[in-house]
Each structure stands twice: as structure tokens, then as C-alpha cells.
Image 1 (cartoon, rainbow, N blue to C red):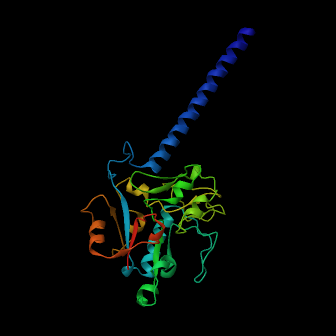
Image 2 (image 1 turned 60 degrees about the vertical axis):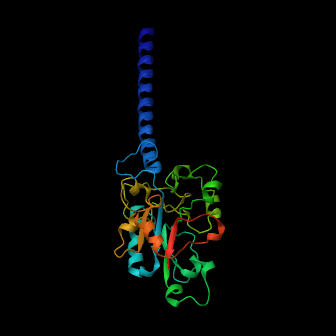
Amino acid sequence: MKSDRRHFLKAAGVATIGVAAGATAAEANLLDSAKELLLGPKGAAPYPEAKKNARWAMVVDTRKLTAESMEKMIHACNHAHNIPLHPLRKKGDKYNKDEIKWIWEEEFENAFPGQMNEHLPPKVTQNEVLVLCNQCENPACVRVCPTKATFQRDDGIVIMDFHRCIGCRFCMAACPYGSRSFNFKDPRIASLEINPEFPTRMKGVVEKCNFCAEQLDKGLQPHCVEACENGELVFGDMNDPESEIRKVLRNNYTIRRKPEVGTQPQVYYIV
């Protein structure tokens, strides 16, 4: 009897260790997937197509933007990143706390308050422009995050780990561009058709544009750039002097949002 009991306890112990080992392996696989998504080409590149030693930036040619083109680019981003469609701002409203924004339309005077003067042509000041996270070279949001949920990759992209975000919103207070949104409501309820290739997140988490890091790591362009039909957005590697974005910046006068705050935005605007 005693022998049977010892045998049972031994077998139970082995089974417990097996289950624990299985759980650990599953967790390890999950962590590997998360690291691959978040860290991209740092270290061993997850995809051979990923460009090495890049420094990513974007140019927005406001002269080419139309209401239709901006809607296409916003829709492409929303769908790819499972962005919830809580009630959006109505025209004239300045703020809606439930709205989640990665890339959105903004009035010129709100996007560039320091650039306004009475002699600017109406075609510049009366049209809306596309704004997004500026992927700052000197990001204030990274410095204030207490859990390192917001961090900067070697290629300059400021990215978020949703699982580490505790919802303190220090990053939102630090961002001078209003580029971050807080999920006051469950984002999974109001999402479009779920894209299984991008993680969903929970209520109480901050989120923002990530320059489509998951696309860049596969050697692809951001979704909003792919949705362009007339060259409204130019995206590329600032470390490559022969890249298209460097040529565009050499040949056009550009401005950036709130340069006086010293964050060194990596989104440039042709006006």
C-alpha cells in the first residue's frame, strides 16, 4: 500500500513538472514573438528583408493631400493596427477623450501654431494636414515612462509594449504633440475586423503610431505610405544620402511641428 502511494506521488510529481515545462515553453514562444514584433532587426534580424542600420523618417507633402487620400491612409492604418472606432470628433470639436488616434487630420493652425501669420496663403492655412507620432530623436515620452513600456529602437522608432503599460499616462502629459491616446473603453469592442497579425490591447492602455515597425521588419513600407496614390507621403532611411527621402528634403523647404521644444521630430512637412 505504502509502495503504491509512493508510486502515485512520484508519477504525479513527474506530471506536474511536465505541465510546468510545457507552460514555460509556451510562455517562451510568446515572449519570442513579442520580442520579434517589438524589437525588430536589433540583434539577429527576424527577417532577412529588414534593412540594417536605418534611421527612419517621413515627409508629408501637404500640397498633395486631399480629403479622399487622407481618408484612405487613415483607414489603412486603423485596419492594420486594430484601432477601435469609438465616436470620432465632429468637425469643430477640439477633443474627444474616447477617440484613439494613430494618424489623423488636423487643422493647420493646431498642427503648426508657431508657423501661423496673417500673410500665409489660404490654401496652406485652410486645409487640414495629416499628423501622427513624430518619432522624435529626443523623445520626452521615453524618459518619463516608469515601466519602460515606451522605448526607442536602434532605428529611431519610439515603440510601445502594451503588456508593460500601467496606464499612468505620464507619456501623454510629456508628449507635446498629443500623439498618444488612452483606452478609456475596451478597444476590442469597437475595433474593425480584427487583424490577427497585430496584437489587440486592453482597456487602460496607452497607444500610438509605431511607424509600422512590423512592416519595416519585413522590408515593407508603412501601411499609410502603401495607401498613397500620388506621393503624398515619402518614407525612408535618413542614414542613406541617396534615399528618396533625403533627395526630397534636399529639394524642398520643409517644416516640423513645434521645433522649439527640442524633441527633433522625424516627420517633416512640405507646405
